[in-house]
Amino acid sequence: MPPARPRFATLDETHDPARVSWVASANGHADFPIQNLPFGVFRRAGSNEAPRVGVAIGDAIVDVAACHAADCFAEESERVHRAARACAAPSLNTLMALGAEARIALRGALSRLLDESEPVHLRQTAQHALVPQAEAELFLPVQVGDYTDFYASVHHASNVGALFRPDQPLLPNYKWVPIGYHGRASSLVVSETPVRRPRGQRKGPNDAVPTVGPSRSLDYELELGAFVGTGNALGSTIAMPDAETHLWGVCLLNDWSARDIQAWEYQPLGPFLAKNFASTLGAWVVTMEALAPFRTALAPRAEGDPAPLPYLAAESDAAFGALDVTVEVWLRTAAMRAQGLPATRLSQGSARDLYWTFAQMLAHHASSGCNLRPGDLLGSGTISGPAPDSRGCLLELTRRASEPLTLPSGETRGFLEDGDELTLTAFAARDGAVRIGFGTCRGEVLAADA
Ligand code: MN
Image 1: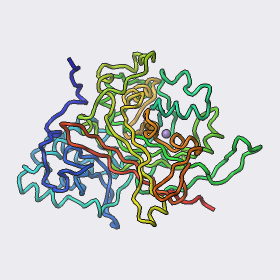
Image 2: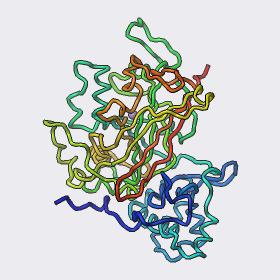
Image 3: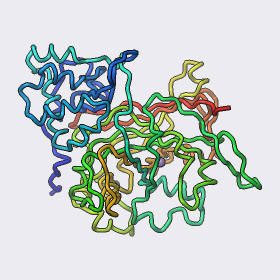
Image 4: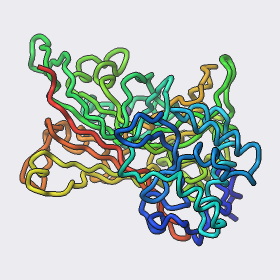
């Protein structure tokens, strides 16, 4: 008998595949049907409006606080009212701090409001709180206090390790400890923000001394980021069975990386300037509830691998801790744009292929007594799978530029060039559920400062 679905994987009427919205563009939308309802921060482009929380529905955004002000939630609970009021803020942090129950209640209320069976007078009121996405400016959804990037893909760790340490690709701690490092929150930018090629110290194996200049091996990393909702007090820990209730939602994350700077600086303390010049977040945070139909077990560990230590283990996590989310990377160079060529897909992988779940990363993070706070970001690390076309960065795909990719334009790429436009996408789909997506996480590479 299959194990019972834990609360975080439980389905309710908001997941009903038969539910359709009066927002016509939502029905059949690849990313934002009524079953998704991801959160972001927006305002009308070119306006002086205050940025505020919105929810994507089809081609539009619902202004949640405006709905509340117009009494669309009059029949709903006080919990919904409090959550809707938190959506007047310029980031999701206030709503995140209210925790899982507030998020679940607001999702239910929004799902009812946007359902085609909603009474006409409420639909008409809510219609006034819709802004077309094409007319909106999107902001970083969260003011991230602390950003930690993990290394949760054993395939990525093995592939990269083999390039740098052919004799010992995977270090002995990997299968015991969710490896991570403390990243930089100040340089997180939202999708569509151009990213300038960093300058730094580079020293090739045949160079006597390092030189300073623009990175010659700029790379992306295909990741998912999980946001912390309610945190924990300094000195306290989070037990695995409780870890899911501290996770708020998931978004796309590109951890841009300068491999030449990284190779020279990373020992003994890990990534520093190679990673801190920019990391791009998708604009939409997909809630844990929207992901409930797509919860599953991680791909099985290899024969002989240790079981997770007790503080990293829970039955519910073993059965449903993973996200059955497909992740993709697309590249469009300046020449491809000039020739009218569409973006080309570089890779496709799955978050199921990670070695650790977000709940394990979170429980491990707090296991020292480190306090996590609402809006903290946990990056998965590059998501790579066992197949060659599932490698989530160019370092792996081109084996450090030794096997360049050939693009539809005839160009080749070992690493990114100026003018390259890099896009991450992700979606979840299975029989019996409506497909949902994460939008896009895009950035164009600008030339280094002179
Ligand atoms: Mn990374």
